[in-house]
Amino acid sequence: MAVITMARQFGAGGRTLGKRLSKQLNYEFFDDSIIQELSKKAKVSKFTIKDIEQTAGGFFSKIVSSALSRSYMERLTGADIGYMDENIYVEKLKEVVIEIAKTDNIIILGRGSQYILKDMENTYHFLLIGEREDRIKFMQNFYDYSRSKAYQAVVNGEKRRRNLYTKFGKKNYNDPGLYHMVFNMSKLSLDQAMEQICTMVKPSEPS
Image 1 (tube, rainbow, N blue to C red):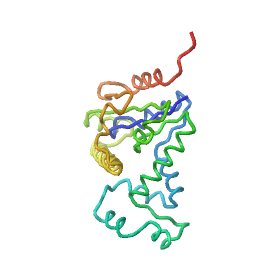
Image 2: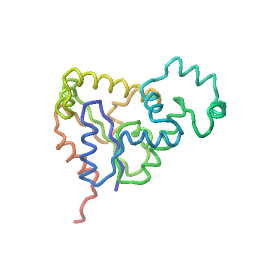
Image 3: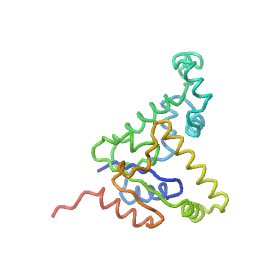
């Protein structure tokens, strides 16, 4: 049927909505499972992937990337162990997302998929946004977080998101022109957003 990418401000409900949509549409949902695929391709641990995602263009990583070639590091660590820097991360992430998208009937949460698949046919891109206070309350209500834990989760999530798009050289990730629809979750419910997406994605019934 289609491929759906879902970007979101952290706490706007992207993962929750994505899981609901996957059940409603009978699609496969990919979120952090992409990390597993990345670790296999790059032959590194999942923790290495997470570390790369949480840092963006740091001084140390730039020095290492410029001073040590990939072939040298592979010889040093061994091909079975693997090596990853920010450039390899972006390269492998693109490979994994494109490979996943070829299977069709999937939903991909974040990880720059709206950029990687921007020219792919039958692909729909959505963005969820919301006021920070509403996103904090969402984390409290749906994940049973305390106020302080919810606040920290939202702040950390925003930082990781900025870091990821820095690796892609992108600063316009909230630009509505990138998406088929933008949902302000401070004004909409999850059910309302899901109804709109299903209407757009589902093929129309023959008259």
